Length: 375
Ligand SMILES: Nc1ncnc2c1ncn2[C@@H]1O[C@H](COP(=O)(O)OP(=O)(O)O)[C@@H](O)[C@H]1O
Ligand SMILES: [Mg+2]
Image (cartoon, rainbow, N blue to C red):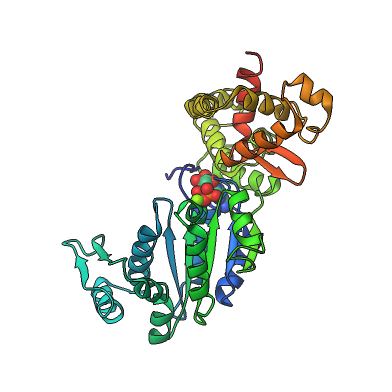
């Protein structure tokens, strides 16, 4: 019997629910060569969705290349990963990588290394002083696509990372100038820091302005979650009522990863049929499993920032211009509130949509209300 619920890493197969319309929309983009920018807070399901759609789109006419640039610290890291993964993932077997690497890169790069284990060991070493070379590397998917007669979709996870690179606007200009001329290649650029990504893609003065279809991924609906949870219990010989499944969703505000984690905690406690007591106990487990993380969030905050979160937790989400809110929560001036919002958004603790401020992490919110407010 497999694990009925999965959290912490991207999910697929039986553990993947709903997202039918999201998958269709993304698949249409992939198939028609329309570039797309996908944005949502962490752990709502971007990576899972892109992986699912990548598998659906993969065919003899379309190759999908997936890379995650979270660990790239600069443009050099990026070029290296980009070139390596494009070569690897557009080939069927490792002999073909070698062939492609020689064919498309050897004129450009003197050193290509293959390790003993060809499945994991292939990398290109680049000479970054040559700027023409970098443009050529960015054009690699177009060259391969034309040569092989298929189209390519390059999906880049944690794309917000490029805003950390030195001189990143210049770097983005370069990417855009090469990528926008590619007729056989489209891109799916996705990540979590909404304020960073919105700036990259929606600000007229930025190179990636209007690069593609911007897609703000929403949460999975309660009805879909209920069906999913009940089904996963049933398929493992246990049961849960729709009402309790709903309670799981409500408690964690439909946050994908937490729904799965809380459902898993309930499932372990359940003998045959889940009870309300099981759900309450499972929530306490959820706090315990995550409290280290929450203490770490708190450790890095100033007194003002904690005061601000208190106000948000109390539902004062759009009342920060009121002087009584400023006074009651000791927030200082309204200019200070602006700084607090910016800082907490940067830390990914809050989301700001229009004038509404909310916690990004619904379980942290409950934990914060229980543990921090009373200090
Ligand atoms: N479509 C889905 N169906 C079921 N669970 C999901 C789905 N998408 C995400 N999850 C849950 O959320 C977790 C985080 O998903 P992930 O794709 O890594 O999110 P992101 O890339 O947005 O951070 C997964 O491990 C899984 O528990
Ligand atoms: Mg992800």
